[in-house]
Image 1 (cartoon, rainbow, N blue to C red):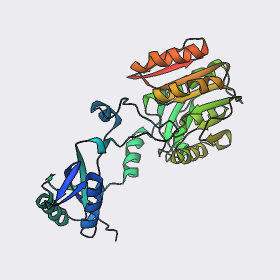
Image 2 (image 1 turned 90 degrees about the vertical axis):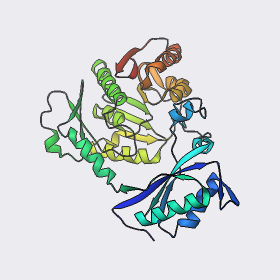
Image 3 (image 1 turned 90 degrees about the horizontal axis):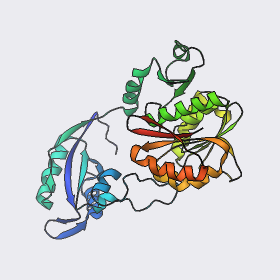
Image 4 (image 1 turned 135 degrees about the horizontal axis):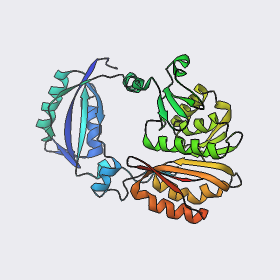
Length: 335
């Protein structure tokens, strides 16, 4: 039975690797969570969040050697960092404060585990919350030299107000894919695409967008007349990107794939806004697909990433990049 409520009630449970119940039965942590469901699933337990550990935190605790961890379109490596912790913080969610309090008292008595106080968790329409925050940009978010970005739900007539000259309007519906235009790396890439287009027309040329996310960079290139091959491993992100392409009337100009095409494919412009380990891993493949003297735009980088990316790609290309900065983020551009 699904309980509909405006709020849930949760408490935090501090769980070691081994849990003893009633002083007799011992469970490892995963089996203990299964026991919780068996014991409280019919007594108001709505959910168990078994803990979160970000890659940066895992690196600090010695469970991960690199805080920038991604799967890079391959079989995922061992990343169950929570299970590596001596004590993990789990959140238990209940349908009422009374049921939550009863479970908290009982678990303390049965297991001796430390349980925090019961707190109310108000339900929230996350989509509406995001829209409210993004609607603060309803007058348009400008990214020089060409772009003005609006949320998709702003009416077309309204979005055209104040757009002058060569400015391109780009409309984005946030979803599973990274990239709404507000992040510095997205801005740096859009700026670079605009600068490339001023030096060489993108009309009718082929562009590769590697790690396309929401599709915002692919759409930007398509709005300038390019035909874009967008590579993205996440199916949900592809769905979001296809929706965004349709919103911007460029769906016929963008092809989505989960893997790079043949090495013989050459692109006058290659864009990759993704993390350093993936750029290093795919450096030879990306350079092989770049047309002679083509433009390359790489971002998703912080300052400490720059020297390695510069060394690897400049070694393959035989030329040096321009390094651009926005706050702590960096973008390398070979034009």
